[in-house]
Amino acid sequence: MNPFDLSGRLAVVTGCRRGIGLAIAEALAAAGADIIGVSASMEDHGSEAAARVTAHGRSFTPIRADLSDRAAVHELADGLRDVDILINNAGTIRRAPAAEHSDADWDHVLEVNLSAQFVLARSVGRTMLDRGAGRIIFTASMLSFQGGVTVPGYAAAKSGIAGLTRALANEWAGRGVNVNAIAPGYIATDNTQALQDDPARNRSILDRIPAGRWGRPEDVAGAAVFLASDAARYVHGAIIPVDGGWLAR
Image 1: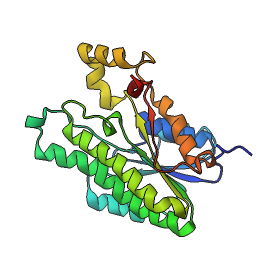
Image 2: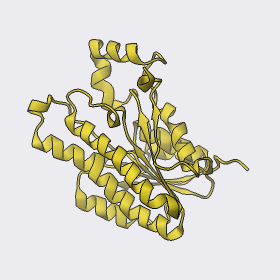
Image 3: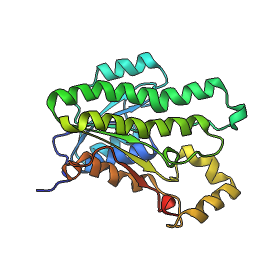
């Protein structure tokens, strides 16, 4: 038997229209899972996510939902049934020095990156607990371990994701639900474009990464397949860095 085979399983991937979420959705489909793709700007038809998933012979169901809107998150959560895998990946970032970081930016980032994640995990987790099986995977960050610069809301939210991962694992591991997180390092996505475009920051980041390059979204996808699969059935409360060696430096 192939312990990484996800045939017959249904995965929800939030933030799957681009970047890390898109790569994860495709990798899960390649492993056999059908995908429900969630994004605030998800197209009803013709999305890249749909094309990549269906190319592997799996079904793709698009859902448009704004995770900064608590009512929309509850509506989304209430409509998710028979989910085997929840990839809580959607996120946002607002950059400003801490002394100038507005309440609006703080509230928006915490809502999308932490509160919405909990609401979805709580709702989907209940159905998994009823069945005695399920996988919940959060997207954490290097800033789950470090403080970062000019992103206090993001750092606080991603630190919260690390704590939430462990808290849910403590409660649910004995009931058949695996809760873990992936902590991507510096991945070349829209969220990090400002850093890539800043010559000094880009150089300082590359100088610290032992692998010598920015990560790509597909570099993260394998960890998601692992955590979603039977190969990880005894993995609970882990936060797995996919960082090119950043934390080892």
